[in-house]
Image (cartoon, rainbow, N blue to C red; front, side):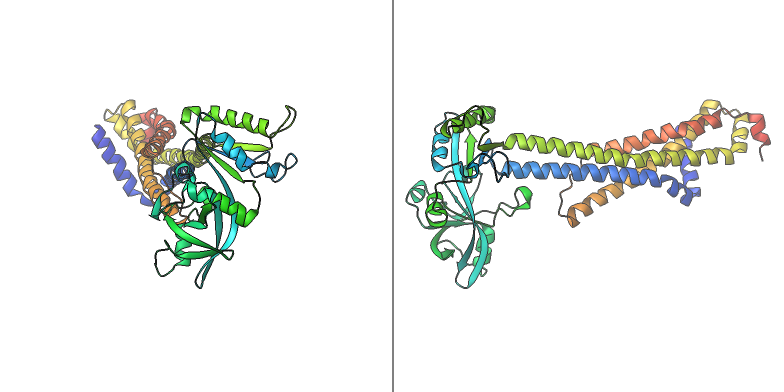
Length: 404
Protein backbone atom coordinates (compact mmCIF):
# COMPACT_ATOMS: atom_id res chain seq x y z
CA UNK A 1 0.00 0.00 0.00
CA UNK A 2 1.34 3.41 -0.99
CA UNK A 3 1.83 6.21 1.52
CA UNK A 4 -1.01 8.16 -0.06
CA UNK A 5 -3.38 5.20 0.22
CA UNK A 6 -2.31 4.60 3.83
CA UNK A 7 -3.02 8.24 4.69
CA UNK A 8 -6.43 8.01 3.01
CA UNK A 9 -7.32 4.88 5.01
CA UNK A 10 -6.17 6.53 8.24
CA UNK A 11 -8.20 9.66 7.51
CA UNK A 12 -11.34 7.66 6.70
CA UNK A 13 -10.93 5.75 9.95
CA UNK A 14 -10.64 9.03 11.87
CA UNK A 15 -13.83 10.40 10.28
CA UNK A 16 -15.73 7.13 10.75
CA UNK A 17 -15.43 7.49 14.54
CA UNK A 18 -15.53 11.26 15.00
CA UNK A 19 -16.38 11.36 18.70
CA UNK A 20 -13.87 8.66 19.62
CA UNK A 21 -11.19 10.37 17.56
CA UNK A 22 -11.94 13.76 19.16
CA UNK A 23 -11.76 12.35 22.69
CA UNK A 24 -8.52 10.57 21.79
CA UNK A 25 -7.00 13.80 20.48
CA UNK A 26 -8.18 15.88 23.44
CA UNK A 27 -4.99 15.42 25.46
CA UNK A 28 -2.88 16.39 22.45
CA UNK A 29 -5.09 19.42 21.75
CA UNK A 30 -4.86 20.66 25.35
CA UNK A 31 -1.13 19.99 25.54
CA UNK A 32 -0.23 21.79 22.30
CA UNK A 33 -2.52 24.73 23.10
CA UNK A 34 -1.11 25.07 26.62
CA UNK A 35 2.50 24.93 25.42
CA UNK A 36 1.90 27.63 22.81
CA UNK A 37 0.03 29.90 25.25
CA UNK A 38 2.66 29.49 28.00
CA UNK A 39 5.58 30.20 25.67
CA UNK A 40 3.89 33.13 23.93
CA UNK A 41 2.83 34.77 27.20
CA UNK A 42 6.26 34.13 28.73
CA UNK A 43 8.07 35.64 25.76
CA UNK A 44 5.65 38.56 25.79
CA UNK A 45 6.41 39.18 29.46
CA UNK A 46 10.15 39.05 28.75
CA UNK A 47 9.79 41.51 25.87
CA UNK A 48 7.64 43.88 27.94
CA UNK A 49 9.96 43.94 30.95
CA UNK A 50 13.03 44.31 28.74
CA UNK A 51 11.40 47.16 26.82
CA UNK A 52 10.39 48.97 30.01
CA UNK A 53 13.87 48.73 31.49
CA UNK A 54 15.49 49.76 28.21
CA UNK A 55 13.12 52.75 28.03
CA UNK A 56 14.54 53.98 31.34
CA UNK A 57 17.80 54.74 29.55
CA UNK A 58 20.88 53.05 28.19
CA UNK A 59 24.10 52.38 30.12
CA UNK A 60 22.31 53.45 33.29
CA UNK A 61 23.16 53.11 36.97
CA UNK A 62 20.74 54.14 39.72
CA UNK A 63 22.42 55.13 42.99
CA UNK A 64 20.09 55.20 46.00
CA UNK A 65 20.63 55.81 49.72
CA UNK A 66 20.44 52.83 52.07
CA UNK A 67 22.03 49.39 52.06
CA UNK A 68 19.68 47.75 49.57
CA UNK A 69 16.94 48.47 47.04
CA UNK A 70 13.92 49.81 48.86
CA UNK A 71 15.80 49.87 52.17
CA UNK A 72 14.41 52.13 54.84
CA UNK A 73 17.09 51.47 57.40
CA UNK A 74 20.75 50.73 57.11
CA UNK A 75 23.86 52.36 58.46
CA UNK A 76 23.28 55.41 60.61
CA UNK A 77 21.74 58.13 58.49
CA UNK A 78 21.90 55.94 55.39
CA UNK A 79 18.49 57.06 54.10
CA UNK A 80 19.92 60.60 53.84
CA UNK A 81 23.35 59.56 52.66
CA UNK A 82 23.30 61.06 49.14
CA UNK A 83 23.65 64.76 48.38
CA UNK A 84 23.98 67.08 45.40
CA UNK A 85 27.71 67.26 46.08
CA UNK A 86 27.91 63.47 45.62
CA UNK A 87 26.24 63.84 42.23
CA UNK A 88 28.69 66.58 41.26
CA UNK A 89 31.65 64.42 42.29
CA UNK A 90 30.33 61.45 40.29
CA UNK A 91 29.94 63.63 37.18
CA UNK A 92 33.69 64.30 37.28
CA UNK A 93 34.56 60.61 36.77
CA UNK A 94 36.16 60.14 33.31
CA UNK A 95 33.85 57.34 32.11
CA UNK A 96 30.63 59.08 33.17
CA UNK A 97 28.58 60.69 30.39
CA UNK A 98 25.76 62.33 32.37
CA UNK A 99 24.50 62.58 35.93
CA UNK A 100 21.02 63.58 37.08
CA UNK A 101 20.08 63.64 40.78
CA UNK A 102 16.38 63.54 41.61
CA UNK A 103 13.87 64.10 44.41
CA UNK A 104 10.26 62.90 44.30
CA UNK A 105 7.32 64.29 46.27
CA UNK A 106 3.56 63.80 46.17
CA UNK A 107 1.82 67.13 45.52
CA UNK A 108 -1.56 68.54 44.64
CA UNK A 109 -1.44 70.28 41.28
CA UNK A 110 -4.10 72.81 40.31
CA UNK A 111 -5.00 74.87 37.27
CA UNK A 112 -8.12 76.99 37.55
CA UNK A 113 -10.84 74.78 39.02
CA UNK A 114 -9.04 71.55 38.11
CA UNK A 115 -6.93 69.68 40.69
CA UNK A 116 -4.86 66.53 40.39
CA UNK A 117 -2.70 64.58 42.84
CA UNK A 118 0.56 63.71 41.16
CA UNK A 119 4.31 63.32 41.71
CA UNK A 120 6.71 66.21 41.34
CA UNK A 121 10.21 65.21 40.32
CA UNK A 122 13.01 67.64 41.00
CA UNK A 123 15.96 66.87 38.75
CA UNK A 124 18.57 68.38 36.45
CA UNK A 125 18.40 69.28 32.76
CA UNK A 126 20.43 66.18 31.83
CA UNK A 127 17.59 63.91 33.04
CA UNK A 128 15.92 64.35 29.64
CA UNK A 129 18.85 62.75 27.81
CA UNK A 130 19.64 60.09 30.41
CA UNK A 131 16.07 58.75 30.46
CA UNK A 132 15.46 59.05 26.70
CA UNK A 133 12.57 61.48 27.15
CA UNK A 134 11.08 63.50 24.31
CA UNK A 135 9.38 66.89 24.49
CA UNK A 136 6.02 67.05 22.69
CA UNK A 137 5.44 70.79 23.19
CA UNK A 138 7.53 73.66 24.51
CA UNK A 139 10.90 72.75 26.02
CA UNK A 140 12.55 71.13 29.01
CA UNK A 141 14.12 73.39 31.62
CA UNK A 142 17.72 74.46 31.03
CA UNK A 143 20.80 74.28 33.27
CA UNK A 144 20.29 78.02 33.84
CA UNK A 145 16.74 77.38 35.10
CA UNK A 146 18.13 74.77 37.48
CA UNK A 147 20.89 77.08 38.69
CA UNK A 148 18.44 79.90 39.40
CA UNK A 149 15.86 77.62 41.07
CA UNK A 150 13.35 78.91 38.52
CA UNK A 151 9.65 78.34 39.16
CA UNK A 152 9.10 76.47 35.90
CA UNK A 153 7.55 73.06 35.29
CA UNK A 154 7.34 70.43 32.57
CA UNK A 155 4.21 68.26 32.61
CA UNK A 156 3.65 64.64 31.72
CA UNK A 157 0.72 64.02 29.33
CA UNK A 158 -1.49 62.55 32.08
CA UNK A 159 -1.10 65.66 34.23
CA UNK A 160 -1.79 67.96 31.28
CA UNK A 161 -4.93 65.99 30.35
CA UNK A 162 -6.31 66.26 33.89
CA UNK A 163 -5.45 69.90 34.52
CA UNK A 164 -6.50 71.07 31.06
CA UNK A 165 -9.32 68.69 30.05
CA UNK A 166 -10.61 71.06 27.36
CA UNK A 167 -7.55 70.31 25.24
CA UNK A 168 -5.95 73.72 25.75
CA UNK A 169 -2.16 73.57 25.52
CA UNK A 170 -0.55 73.74 28.95
CA UNK A 171 2.55 75.52 27.64
CA UNK A 172 2.64 79.09 28.94
CA UNK A 173 -0.09 78.44 31.50
CA UNK A 174 0.29 78.92 35.25
CA UNK A 175 -0.33 76.04 37.65
CA UNK A 176 0.15 75.60 41.38
CA UNK A 177 1.95 72.76 43.12
CA UNK A 178 0.97 72.70 46.80
CA UNK A 179 -0.18 76.32 46.32
CA UNK A 180 3.17 77.42 44.82
CA UNK A 181 2.87 79.08 41.40
CA UNK A 182 4.79 77.57 38.47
CA UNK A 183 4.88 78.45 34.78
CA UNK A 184 4.51 75.47 32.44
CA UNK A 185 7.27 75.59 29.81
CA UNK A 186 6.84 72.16 28.25
CA UNK A 187 4.92 68.91 27.94
CA UNK A 188 6.63 65.55 27.44
CA UNK A 189 5.71 62.93 24.86
CA UNK A 190 3.87 59.87 26.24
CA UNK A 191 6.07 57.23 27.88
CA UNK A 192 3.50 54.70 29.10
CA UNK A 193 3.96 52.47 32.12
CA UNK A 194 7.33 51.88 33.71
CA UNK A 195 8.56 49.20 36.11
CA UNK A 196 5.78 48.01 38.38
CA UNK A 197 3.14 49.43 36.05
CA UNK A 198 3.64 53.01 37.31
CA UNK A 199 2.28 55.66 34.93
CA UNK A 200 5.39 57.56 33.85
CA UNK A 201 3.20 60.25 32.28
CA UNK A 202 1.69 61.21 35.64
CA UNK A 203 4.65 63.39 36.60
CA UNK A 204 5.64 67.05 36.91
CA UNK A 205 9.32 67.91 36.38
CA UNK A 206 10.93 70.93 38.04
CA UNK A 207 14.57 71.99 38.61
CA UNK A 208 16.09 70.13 41.56
CA UNK A 209 17.23 73.36 43.22
CA UNK A 210 13.62 74.53 43.14
CA UNK A 211 12.43 71.25 44.65
CA UNK A 212 14.98 71.43 47.46
CA UNK A 213 14.23 75.07 48.24
CA UNK A 214 10.43 74.90 47.98
CA UNK A 215 9.54 71.35 49.02
CA UNK A 216 12.27 69.72 51.12
CA UNK A 217 14.58 72.41 52.48
CA UNK A 218 17.46 69.90 52.40
CA UNK A 219 20.42 69.05 50.17
CA UNK A 220 19.77 65.31 50.21
CA UNK A 221 18.65 63.50 47.05
CA UNK A 222 16.73 60.26 46.65
CA UNK A 223 18.33 58.95 43.46
CA UNK A 224 21.39 59.75 41.38
CA UNK A 225 21.02 58.66 37.75
CA UNK A 226 24.45 57.89 36.29
CA UNK A 227 24.93 57.29 32.56
CA UNK A 228 28.17 55.63 31.47
CA UNK A 229 29.81 56.58 28.18
CA UNK A 230 29.16 53.11 26.72
CA UNK A 231 27.94 49.66 27.75
CA UNK A 232 31.46 48.24 28.02
CA UNK A 233 32.43 50.72 30.73
CA UNK A 234 29.26 50.26 32.82
CA UNK A 235 30.75 47.76 35.29
CA UNK A 236 33.88 49.89 35.67
CA UNK A 237 31.78 52.99 36.34
CA UNK A 238 29.80 51.08 38.96
CA UNK A 239 33.01 50.16 40.79
CA UNK A 240 34.38 53.71 40.53
CA UNK A 241 31.14 55.23 41.85
CA UNK A 242 31.12 52.82 44.79
CA UNK A 243 34.75 53.62 45.63
CA UNK A 244 34.17 57.37 45.32
CA UNK A 245 31.08 57.37 47.56
CA UNK A 246 32.77 55.26 50.24
CA UNK A 247 35.62 57.77 50.30
CA UNK A 248 33.29 60.77 50.41
CA UNK A 249 31.17 59.22 53.18
CA UNK A 250 34.29 58.30 55.18
CA UNK A 251 33.35 54.63 55.49
CA UNK A 252 35.92 52.30 57.01
CA UNK A 253 36.62 48.89 55.40
CA UNK A 254 34.52 47.27 58.13
CA UNK A 255 31.47 49.44 57.45
CA UNK A 256 28.79 48.52 54.95
CA UNK A 257 27.92 50.83 52.09
CA UNK A 258 25.34 53.45 53.04
CA UNK A 259 24.14 53.45 49.43
CA UNK A 260 23.24 50.87 46.80
CA UNK A 261 23.84 50.84 43.06
CA UNK A 262 21.48 49.26 40.58
CA UNK A 263 22.95 48.26 37.23
CA UNK A 264 19.93 48.40 34.91
CA UNK A 265 21.62 46.27 32.24
CA UNK A 266 22.33 43.52 34.78
CA UNK A 267 18.77 43.76 36.10
CA UNK A 268 17.39 43.46 32.57
CA UNK A 269 19.48 40.35 31.92
CA UNK A 270 18.45 38.81 35.25
CA UNK A 271 14.76 39.49 34.68
CA UNK A 272 14.95 38.09 31.15
CA UNK A 273 16.72 34.93 32.34
CA UNK A 274 14.23 34.45 35.18
CA UNK A 275 11.25 34.90 32.87
CA UNK A 276 12.70 32.43 30.37
CA UNK A 277 13.21 29.87 33.13
CA UNK A 278 9.62 30.29 34.32
CA UNK A 279 8.36 30.01 30.75
CA UNK A 280 10.22 26.75 30.21
CA UNK A 281 8.95 25.42 33.54
CA UNK A 282 5.33 26.25 32.71
CA UNK A 283 5.70 24.86 29.18
CA UNK A 284 7.15 21.64 30.62
CA UNK A 285 4.16 21.29 32.94
CA UNK A 286 1.83 21.89 29.98
CA UNK A 287 3.72 19.26 27.97
CA UNK A 288 2.54 16.62 30.47
CA UNK A 289 -0.85 16.88 28.73
CA UNK A 290 0.87 15.75 25.54
CA UNK A 291 2.09 12.62 27.29
CA UNK A 292 -1.40 11.98 28.64
CA UNK A 293 -2.69 12.40 25.10
CA UNK A 294 -0.10 9.91 23.89
CA UNK A 295 -1.37 7.34 26.38
CA UNK A 296 -4.87 7.96 25.04
CA UNK A 297 -3.65 7.34 21.49
CA UNK A 298 -1.97 4.08 22.52
CA UNK A 299 -5.13 2.96 24.28
CA UNK A 300 -7.42 3.65 21.33
CA UNK A 301 -4.96 2.09 18.87
CA UNK A 302 -4.89 -1.10 20.95
CA UNK A 303 -8.68 -1.15 20.81
CA UNK A 304 -8.50 -0.57 17.05
CA UNK A 305 -6.06 -3.46 16.58
CA UNK A 306 -8.39 -5.76 18.50
CA UNK A 307 -11.43 -4.62 16.49
CA UNK A 308 -9.59 -5.09 13.19
CA UNK A 309 -7.89 -8.39 13.93
CA UNK A 310 -9.79 -10.19 11.16
CA UNK A 311 -8.95 -7.38 8.70
CA UNK A 312 -5.28 -7.77 9.61
CA UNK A 313 -5.48 -11.51 8.96
CA UNK A 314 -7.11 -10.98 5.55
CA UNK A 315 -4.47 -8.44 4.52
CA UNK A 316 -1.69 -10.80 5.53
CA UNK A 317 -3.37 -13.66 3.66
CA UNK A 318 -3.38 -11.66 0.42
CA UNK A 319 0.29 -10.77 0.75
CA UNK A 320 0.62 -7.76 3.05
CA UNK A 321 3.95 -7.83 4.88
CA UNK A 322 4.47 -7.19 8.59
CA UNK A 323 6.22 -3.94 7.63
CA UNK A 324 3.18 -2.77 5.69
CA UNK A 325 0.88 -3.52 8.63
CA UNK A 326 3.26 -1.76 11.03
CA UNK A 327 3.45 1.29 8.75
CA UNK A 328 -0.33 1.45 8.36
CA UNK A 329 -1.03 1.56 12.09
CA UNK A 330 1.84 3.98 12.75
CA UNK A 331 0.42 6.32 10.12
CA UNK A 332 -3.00 6.13 11.76
CA UNK A 333 -1.49 7.03 15.14
CA UNK A 334 0.50 9.85 13.51
CA UNK A 335 -2.61 11.23 11.79
CA UNK A 336 -4.44 11.28 15.12
CA UNK A 337 -1.63 13.12 16.89
CA UNK A 338 -1.00 15.59 14.06
CA UNK A 339 -4.70 16.37 13.71
CA UNK A 340 -4.79 17.03 17.45
CA UNK A 341 -1.64 19.12 17.11
CA UNK A 342 -3.13 21.32 14.38
CA UNK A 343 -6.35 21.86 16.36
CA UNK A 344 -4.26 22.56 19.47
CA UNK A 345 -2.16 25.06 17.53
CA UNK A 346 -5.28 26.97 16.46
CA UNK A 347 -6.60 26.85 20.04
CA UNK A 348 -3.22 28.05 21.35
CA UNK A 349 -3.09 30.99 18.95
CA UNK A 350 -6.64 31.94 19.91
CA UNK A 351 -5.82 31.59 23.61
CA UNK A 352 -2.72 33.76 23.26
CA UNK A 353 -4.74 36.45 21.49
CA UNK A 354 -7.45 36.38 24.18
CA UNK A 355 -4.88 36.62 26.99
CA UNK A 356 -3.27 39.57 25.25
CA UNK A 357 -6.60 41.36 24.74
CA UNK A 358 -8.35 40.61 28.03
CA UNK A 359 -5.40 40.82 30.42
CA UNK A 360 -3.55 43.62 28.58
CA UNK A 361 -0.54 41.33 28.67
CA UNK A 362 1.53 41.05 25.49
CA UNK A 363 1.79 37.65 23.83
CA UNK A 364 4.62 37.01 21.38
CA UNK A 365 3.87 34.15 18.98
CA UNK A 366 7.18 32.56 18.08
CA UNK A 367 7.18 30.20 15.06
CA UNK A 368 9.67 28.05 16.96
CA UNK A 369 7.11 27.38 19.71
CA UNK A 370 4.52 26.27 17.15
CA UNK A 371 7.00 23.98 15.38
CA UNK A 372 8.14 22.60 18.74
CA UNK A 373 4.59 21.81 19.86
CA UNK A 374 3.57 20.23 16.53
CA UNK A 375 6.82 18.28 16.28
CA UNK A 376 6.49 16.99 19.83
CA UNK A 377 2.90 15.90 19.18
CA UNK A 378 4.10 13.95 16.12
CA UNK A 379 6.81 12.24 18.18
CA UNK A 380 4.22 11.38 20.84
CA UNK A 381 2.02 9.79 18.16
CA UNK A 382 4.86 7.70 16.78
CA UNK A 383 6.18 6.69 20.22
CA UNK A 384 2.84 5.68 21.71
CA UNK A 385 1.55 4.27 18.44
CA UNK A 386 4.48 1.92 17.96
CA UNK A 387 3.42 -0.75 20.45
CA UNK A 388 -0.12 -1.19 19.01
CA UNK A 389 1.32 -1.12 15.48
CA UNK A 390 3.93 -3.72 16.44
CA UNK A 391 1.23 -5.88 17.98
CA UNK A 392 -0.76 -5.74 14.74
CA UNK A 393 2.30 -6.47 12.59
CA UNK A 394 3.27 -9.59 14.58
CA UNK A 395 -0.23 -11.09 14.65
CA UNK A 396 -0.54 -14.72 13.50
CA UNK A 397 -2.53 -14.56 10.23
CA UNK A 398 -4.27 -17.93 10.80
CA UNK A 399 -5.42 -16.96 14.31
CA UNK A 400 -6.37 -13.52 13.03
CA UNK A 401 -8.63 -15.05 10.35
CA UNK A 402 -10.33 -17.20 13.00
CA UNK A 403 -10.97 -14.17 15.25
CA UNK A 404 -14.64 -13.32 15.65
